[in-house]
Amino acid sequence: QKEVEQDPGPLSVPEGAIVSLNCTYSNSAFQYFMWYRQYSRKGPELLMYTYSSGNKEDGRFTAQVDKSSKYISLFIRDSQPSDSATYLCAMSEIRGGYNKLIFGAGTRLAVHP
Amino acid sequence: DAGVTQSPTHLIKTRGQHVTLRCSPISGHKSVSWYQQVLGQGPQFIFQYYEKEERGRGNFPDRFSARQFPNYSSELNVNALLLGDSALYLCASSLVAGANQPQHFGDGTRLSIL
Image (cartoon, rainbow over all chains, first blue to last red):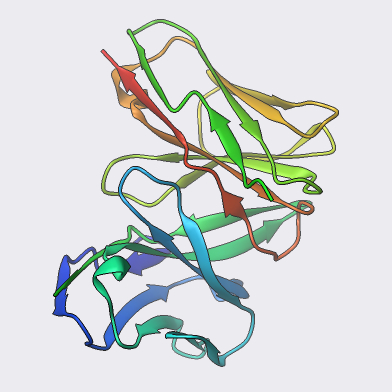
């Protein structure tokens, strides 16, 4: 079993739809959660990060963390064609003086006009 | 402000050769991490460097090595290249190592092994 599970999609939605992207994880030691957006032939771009359970909102994006269920979500409101990309969830693991990010496989999202 | 910069953007090598990839972190960031991203997968952690020292290493063979310079830039070296080393190599920078904080990525070096 992978430490972080993410449905690879692809997910296709019409412009203006609400998009829900999800990840589950197995390691209860994860305390810091991130969402990255990656366009084709580009590096991951940090969208949001959060420590705690609950919701964090930034414009059209809302990140949600449920530590009791080991489940995180990213919601995109009023989706636009420019949101078409691969979305990666990531968890930070601290080990003896360093920290590494553990990623899901990424979900491909296509928003069509 | 400049983000994380990586060079070259694309590289083609043959099996058995050696490659050096370069990374400059965001100004003020002292930690650099390297990741390998194979097509269709999320990035996998290779190394984290801080203050010129290796602080952590992922599950990669000794053919992979790196170093960090006094200006906090970094190089990733891969020896005896294999076909399976074909991937996007990503560099990420952060303020320090060993703490929960954002890591910011460059656009990577796409390495193709023939």
